[in-house]
Length: 221
Image (tube, rainbow, N blue to C red; front, side, top):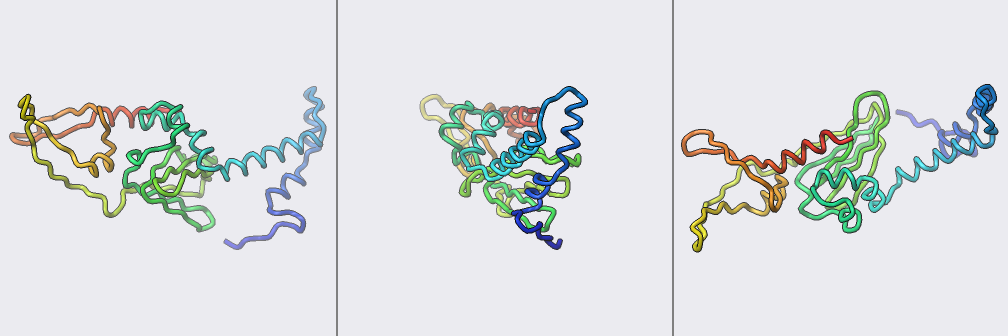
C-alpha cells in the first residue's frame, strides 16, 4: 500500500483530521440540545483523545502490566497487587508464538509469549496485549483488517517420559514431572490433577486447576 504524505505542517493524517474536522456542526448540535461547549472546547477534546490514544499505544511495559493486571490475575491465579508490583515470573511463559500482521503488510512475531484480549472480527478496533519472557510487554490496537495468530513453537515437545518413584517413608507412589513440562504445559504448584482410566494399564492425567483457569479467562469481560 502506497503511503500518502499528510499536508505540509502536519505530522500525520490524524493530526490533520483533528485540526480540520467540522467542529461547527457539533457546536450547532450542542446548541440545539441545550449544551454550552464552544468549538475550541470540542476541538480540544478531540485532540486530548488523540493524545491519550498515542500514549496508550506507546505504553511502557509497566503501564501495560498495570492496565492488564486484573485479567492477568485471573489467568495466572495470583493476586492482582502482586502482579502489578512484581511483574510476571519465568514460569508464566510457555513456548507459544504470537504473530501480528497489520493491514499495511508489516508484521511482528514474539517467541515465548502469550496473548491477552480478544481481537474480534466485528469491524471495530480492539486492544490486545502481548506478554513476552524476554522482550517486555506490549499493547496494540487491532483493526478489522489486522490479524493475530497464536501458535506453539515448532520445537514444542509433545511427548514426555516419567518413571514412577516411591516415598521410602510412606510408601506413596510419586510421579516426578520435568520442570520443562511444567513450564510448557502451565502446570503449577498445588494444581489439582485428575486420573482418568482409559484402558487397562493406561490413564489420562487432567489438570483440573488449569481447565478452571482457562474457563475463567474465556468468560472474563
